[in-house]
Length: 317
Image 1: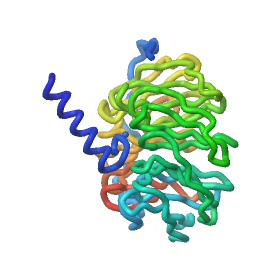
Image 2: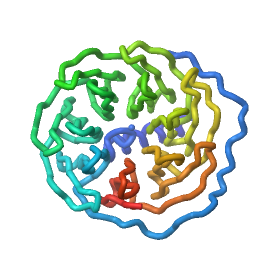
Image 3: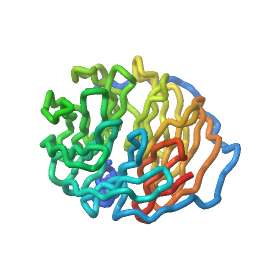
Image 4: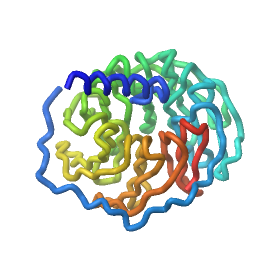
């Protein structure tokens, strides 16, 4: 048992170095239902190659501002702007080891994991500011006029104004690496605590809920919260009102990034070099091949885009 624990700690440390999260990715447990895991035999498995575009050095985070796609390159301390065909429109310097990125119609926010800052850019790439946050900023989320940053090494969430002023810092579980909103509340995936935290818009802790081993990505489909669990090869579907687990769905190896695409849930499998496509009922309906060590995923009108940290590329499906 001790050896297994040591092995897992080594894997986590290695992944965090390579990918800067788990890839560097109180406590009332949620009541789990006795629901049988959804069937996972794919209706189809698309093993055809994706359109793969070479880009940067260690691409991890990816976001869409409504027009352009933004990708962080953690080993070149830069963020890249692309059009919907994958053509590079610009490369912009940011802080050290950029990992997370979020964008809206007016601004792009990048977490700089190694220098404890976030960078704000205009959608034209102009530098609008660099702001101090917690230790090891990893994920970033925009909710209207507020910016939320998950600080993996200080087990905290920083809330910023759109001007970069710190409004508050809130303690959560260990190694928070994923953020999502249900429209009212903020949800945090705590990778090392095997939990998710639900915060109010004011930063009050509304609940801490147990999930699988190594929660990483988190998303809201309009009805439910979905959480990927890196080490248990699962995605879990939660009731947002009380955190109850209503489904557990086996996916690929190293469940990491997650995104919603209409009625489908897209789960990036870092160790399987694939994306699992789920229906909202949790049934796996397809499996898509992508590049090596995929990490993040975003949906745009031109398709599904996945960052491949191991092959320094973006896959388009």
